[in-house]
Amino acid sequence: MTENTGRRGTAVITGAASERGIGRALANRLAATGWSLGLLDIDPDVEQAAADLGAEHGVPALGAVADIADPTTVDAAVRVFEAELPPVAALVNSAGVSSPVSFLDTDLATWERVMRINATGTWVVSKRVVPGMVERGYGRVVSLGSTAMQNGGGTYSKSTYAASKGAIEAFSRALALEVAPHGVTVNVVAPATIDTDIMGGPITDDRRPAFLAQLPVGRLGTTRDVAALIEFLVGEEAGYITGATHNINGGLRIG
Image (cartoon, rainbow, N blue to C red; front, top):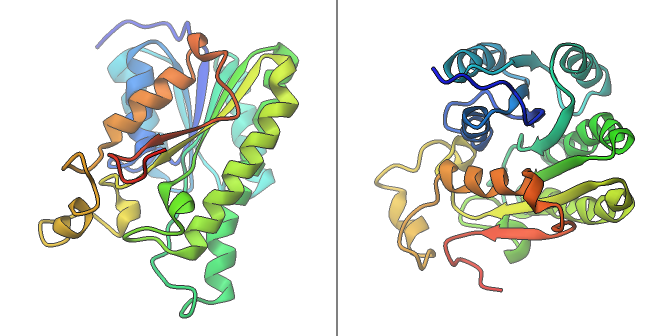
Protein backbone atom coordinates (compact mmCIF):
# COMPACT_ATOMS: atom_id res chain seq x y z
CA MET A 1 0.00 0.00 0.00
CA THR A 2 1.26 3.48 -0.85
CA GLU A 3 1.01 6.32 1.63
CA ASN A 4 -0.70 9.15 -0.23
CA THR A 5 -2.48 11.99 1.50
CA GLY A 6 -5.17 13.11 -0.93
CA ARG A 7 -3.08 16.26 -1.52
CA ARG A 8 -4.54 16.74 -5.00
CA GLY A 9 -8.08 17.18 -3.72
CA THR A 10 -11.08 14.98 -4.41
CA ALA A 11 -12.05 13.57 -7.78
CA VAL A 12 -15.74 12.78 -8.12
CA ILE A 13 -16.14 10.02 -10.71
CA THR A 14 -19.45 8.62 -11.92
CA GLY A 15 -19.82 5.05 -13.14
CA ALA A 16 -16.88 3.68 -11.18
CA ALA A 17 -18.35 0.40 -9.91
CA SER A 18 -17.59 -1.85 -12.89
CA GLU A 19 -14.20 -3.55 -12.67
CA ARG A 20 -13.91 -3.34 -16.48
CA GLY A 21 -14.99 0.27 -16.84
CA ILE A 22 -13.18 3.51 -17.58
CA GLY A 23 -14.37 5.00 -14.30
CA ARG A 24 -12.74 2.29 -12.21
CA ALA A 25 -9.49 2.43 -14.19
CA LEU A 26 -9.37 6.19 -13.72
CA ALA A 27 -10.15 5.97 -10.01
CA ASN A 28 -7.28 3.53 -9.55
CA ARG A 29 -4.90 5.74 -11.51
CA LEU A 30 -5.82 8.92 -9.66
CA ALA A 31 -5.70 7.31 -6.23
CA ALA A 32 -2.20 6.05 -6.99
CA THR A 33 -1.04 9.64 -7.40
CA GLY A 34 -2.68 11.05 -4.30
CA TRP A 35 -6.20 11.99 -5.28
CA SER A 36 -9.03 11.39 -2.85
CA LEU A 37 -12.05 9.69 -4.40
CA GLY A 38 -15.79 10.27 -4.34
CA LEU A 39 -17.31 7.53 -6.49
CA LEU A 40 -20.92 7.56 -7.70
CA ASP A 41 -22.77 4.65 -9.26
CA ILE A 42 -26.21 3.08 -9.25
CA ASP A 43 -24.48 -0.25 -8.57
CA PRO A 44 -24.04 -0.90 -4.80
CA ASP A 45 -20.61 -2.39 -5.56
CA VAL A 46 -19.33 1.18 -5.75
CA GLU A 47 -19.03 1.31 -1.97
CA GLN A 48 -16.69 -1.68 -1.84
CA ALA A 49 -14.76 -0.41 -4.85
CA ALA A 50 -14.04 2.86 -3.05
CA ALA A 51 -13.05 1.07 0.14
CA ASP A 52 -10.66 -1.21 -1.75
CA LEU A 53 -9.02 1.64 -3.66
CA GLY A 54 -8.68 3.75 -0.54
CA ALA A 55 -7.00 0.90 1.33
CA GLU A 56 -4.72 0.00 -1.57
CA HIS A 57 -3.44 3.51 -2.17
CA GLY A 58 -3.73 5.04 1.29
CA VAL A 59 -6.12 7.83 0.29
CA PRO A 60 -9.55 8.92 1.52
CA ALA A 61 -12.18 7.28 -0.68
CA LEU A 62 -15.95 7.02 -0.42
CA GLY A 63 -18.49 5.34 -2.64
CA ALA A 64 -22.14 6.32 -2.81
CA VAL A 65 -25.09 4.69 -4.52
CA ALA A 66 -26.95 7.24 -6.61
CA ASP A 67 -29.01 7.57 -9.76
CA ILE A 68 -26.97 10.22 -11.54
CA ALA A 69 -30.07 11.64 -13.24
CA ASP A 70 -31.86 12.12 -9.91
CA PRO A 71 -30.89 15.42 -8.22
CA THR A 72 -32.01 14.20 -4.80
CA THR A 73 -29.75 11.14 -4.62
CA VAL A 74 -26.87 12.99 -6.25
CA ASP A 75 -27.15 15.83 -3.74
CA ALA A 76 -27.20 13.40 -0.81
CA ALA A 77 -24.06 11.65 -2.07
CA VAL A 78 -22.13 14.82 -2.81
CA ARG A 79 -23.04 16.26 0.59
CA VAL A 80 -21.27 13.28 2.18
CA PHE A 81 -18.23 13.77 -0.05
CA GLU A 82 -18.09 17.47 0.85
CA ALA A 83 -18.34 16.73 4.55
CA GLU A 84 -15.79 13.91 4.73
CA LEU A 85 -13.31 14.42 1.88
CA PRO A 86 -11.01 17.25 0.72
CA PRO A 87 -12.55 19.86 -1.59
CA VAL A 88 -13.67 18.57 -4.97
CA ALA A 89 -11.10 19.56 -7.61
CA ALA A 90 -12.19 17.29 -10.44
CA LEU A 91 -15.42 15.84 -11.80
CA VAL A 92 -15.38 13.06 -14.36
CA ASN A 93 -18.73 12.12 -15.89
CA SER A 94 -17.99 8.61 -17.11
CA ALA A 95 -21.25 6.80 -16.34
CA GLY A 96 -23.25 5.85 -19.39
CA VAL A 97 -25.24 3.28 -21.31
CA SER A 98 -25.22 2.33 -24.97
CA SER A 99 -27.86 1.24 -27.45
CA PRO A 100 -27.17 -1.01 -30.44
CA VAL A 101 -30.72 -0.63 -31.76
CA SER A 102 -31.11 1.18 -35.08
CA PHE A 103 -33.43 4.17 -35.41
CA LEU A 104 -36.02 2.23 -37.41
CA ASP A 105 -36.24 -0.44 -34.70
CA THR A 106 -35.95 1.66 -31.55
CA ASP A 107 -38.69 3.20 -29.44
CA LEU A 108 -39.26 6.26 -27.29
CA ALA A 109 -38.56 4.40 -24.06
CA THR A 110 -35.06 3.48 -25.25
CA TRP A 111 -34.40 7.04 -26.40
CA GLU A 112 -35.49 8.49 -23.07
CA ARG A 113 -33.49 5.97 -21.03
CA VAL A 114 -30.24 6.59 -22.91
CA MET A 115 -30.68 10.36 -22.95
CA ARG A 116 -31.60 10.39 -19.25
CA ILE A 117 -28.53 8.50 -18.12
CA ASN A 118 -25.97 9.91 -20.54
CA ALA A 119 -27.04 13.50 -21.08
CA THR A 120 -29.30 14.35 -18.14
CA GLY A 121 -27.01 12.49 -15.74
CA THR A 122 -24.04 14.54 -16.89
CA TRP A 123 -26.05 17.75 -16.41
CA VAL A 124 -27.36 16.80 -12.95
CA VAL A 125 -23.99 15.85 -11.48
CA SER A 126 -22.29 18.87 -13.06
CA LYS A 127 -25.02 21.14 -11.72
CA ARG A 128 -24.37 19.84 -8.21
CA VAL A 129 -20.56 19.90 -8.29
CA VAL A 130 -19.48 22.76 -10.55
CA PRO A 131 -20.88 25.67 -8.45
CA GLY A 132 -18.55 24.65 -5.62
CA MET A 133 -15.61 24.71 -8.02
CA VAL A 134 -16.62 28.18 -9.21
CA GLU A 135 -16.87 29.39 -5.62
CA ARG A 136 -13.38 28.06 -4.84
CA GLY A 137 -11.95 29.39 -8.09
CA TYR A 138 -10.60 26.06 -9.34
CA GLY A 139 -11.88 22.91 -10.98
CA ARG A 140 -11.54 20.39 -13.78
CA VAL A 141 -14.52 18.74 -15.49
CA VAL A 142 -14.17 15.94 -18.02
CA SER A 143 -17.14 14.18 -19.60
CA LEU A 144 -17.14 11.09 -21.80
CA GLY A 145 -18.20 11.68 -25.38
CA SER A 146 -17.77 9.18 -28.19
CA THR A 147 -16.48 8.79 -31.71
CA ALA A 148 -19.97 7.42 -32.42
CA MET A 149 -21.27 10.99 -32.16
CA GLN A 150 -18.73 12.24 -34.70
CA ASN A 151 -19.29 9.38 -37.13
CA GLY A 152 -23.05 9.10 -36.76
CA GLY A 153 -22.87 5.81 -34.90
CA GLY A 154 -20.40 3.00 -34.48
CA THR A 155 -19.83 -0.70 -34.83
CA TYR A 156 -22.00 -1.31 -31.77
CA SER A 157 -23.90 1.86 -30.82
CA LYS A 158 -26.38 3.59 -33.09
CA SER A 159 -28.29 6.85 -33.40
CA THR A 160 -29.75 7.16 -29.91
CA TYR A 161 -26.37 6.75 -28.24
CA ALA A 162 -24.73 9.10 -30.74
CA ALA A 163 -27.35 11.76 -30.02
CA SER A 164 -26.84 11.50 -26.26
CA LYS A 165 -23.10 11.99 -26.68
CA GLY A 166 -23.73 14.93 -28.98
CA ALA A 167 -25.75 16.54 -26.20
CA ILE A 168 -22.88 16.02 -23.77
CA GLU A 169 -20.40 17.64 -26.16
CA ALA A 170 -22.59 20.68 -26.86
CA PHE A 171 -23.33 21.15 -23.17
CA SER A 172 -19.65 20.85 -22.27
CA ARG A 173 -18.56 23.49 -24.77
CA ALA A 174 -21.17 25.96 -23.54
CA LEU A 175 -20.35 25.26 -19.90
CA ALA A 176 -16.64 25.73 -20.62
CA LEU A 177 -17.29 29.30 -21.78
CA GLU A 178 -19.43 30.12 -18.76
CA VAL A 179 -17.02 28.91 -16.09
CA ALA A 180 -13.64 29.65 -17.69
CA PRO A 181 -13.33 33.04 -15.91
CA HIS A 182 -13.64 31.20 -12.58
CA GLY A 183 -10.66 28.87 -13.01
CA VAL A 184 -12.75 25.87 -14.08
CA THR A 185 -12.03 23.95 -17.27
CA VAL A 186 -14.47 21.66 -19.07
CA ASN A 187 -13.41 19.12 -21.66
CA VAL A 188 -14.72 16.04 -23.45
CA VAL A 189 -12.85 12.81 -24.09
CA ALA A 190 -14.20 10.90 -27.09
CA PRO A 191 -13.12 7.24 -27.19
CA ALA A 192 -13.77 4.82 -30.01
CA THR A 193 -13.63 1.06 -29.43
CA ILE A 194 -12.69 0.42 -25.81
CA ASP A 195 -13.07 -3.10 -24.43
CA THR A 196 -15.64 -2.41 -21.71
CA ASP A 197 -19.05 -3.80 -20.87
CA ILE A 198 -20.74 -0.87 -22.62
CA MET A 199 -19.84 -2.65 -25.85
CA GLY A 200 -22.45 -5.28 -25.09
CA GLY A 201 -20.10 -7.28 -22.88
CA PRO A 202 -16.47 -8.31 -23.40
CA ILE A 203 -15.19 -8.16 -26.96
CA THR A 204 -14.58 -11.87 -27.38
CA ASP A 205 -12.50 -13.51 -30.09
CA ASP A 206 -15.50 -13.99 -32.36
CA ARG A 207 -16.45 -10.30 -32.11
CA ARG A 208 -12.93 -8.88 -32.28
CA PRO A 209 -12.35 -8.95 -36.09
CA ALA A 210 -15.30 -6.65 -36.81
CA PHE A 211 -13.92 -4.03 -34.45
CA LEU A 212 -10.27 -4.37 -35.46
CA ALA A 213 -11.12 -3.94 -39.14
CA GLN A 214 -11.94 -0.29 -38.45
CA LEU A 215 -8.90 0.53 -36.31
CA PRO A 216 -5.71 1.58 -38.13
CA VAL A 217 -3.59 1.04 -35.01
CA GLY A 218 -4.51 -2.66 -35.13
CA ARG A 219 -5.66 -3.08 -31.55
CA LEU A 220 -8.58 -2.33 -29.28
CA GLY A 221 -8.41 0.59 -26.92
CA THR A 222 -8.06 -0.07 -23.20
CA THR A 223 -9.46 1.63 -20.15
CA ARG A 224 -5.87 2.45 -19.22
CA ASP A 225 -5.48 4.42 -22.46
CA VAL A 226 -8.49 6.57 -21.68
CA ALA A 227 -7.67 6.96 -17.99
CA ALA A 228 -4.21 8.30 -18.83
CA LEU A 229 -5.69 11.04 -21.02
CA ILE A 230 -8.27 12.01 -18.42
CA GLU A 231 -5.62 12.07 -15.71
CA PHE A 232 -3.76 14.74 -17.66
CA LEU A 233 -6.90 16.80 -18.28
CA VAL A 234 -7.85 16.90 -14.60
CA GLY A 235 -4.33 17.91 -13.61
CA GLU A 236 -3.18 21.39 -12.72
CA GLU A 237 -1.02 21.68 -15.84
CA ALA A 238 -4.06 21.36 -18.13
CA GLY A 239 -5.46 24.71 -17.09
CA TYR A 240 -5.09 26.28 -20.55
CA ILE A 241 -7.18 23.56 -22.22
CA THR A 242 -10.94 23.98 -22.14
CA GLY A 243 -13.99 23.56 -24.35
CA ALA A 244 -12.22 20.91 -26.42
CA THR A 245 -12.98 17.37 -27.52
CA HIS A 246 -10.01 15.04 -27.24
CA ASN A 247 -10.23 12.05 -29.55
CA ILE A 248 -8.77 8.74 -28.44
CA ASN A 249 -9.83 6.36 -31.18
CA GLY A 250 -6.96 4.36 -32.64
CA GLY A 251 -7.26 6.26 -35.93
CA LEU A 252 -10.91 5.40 -36.50
CA ARG A 253 -11.51 9.09 -37.11
CA ILE A 254 -8.72 11.42 -38.21
CA GLY A 255 -9.07 15.12 -37.68
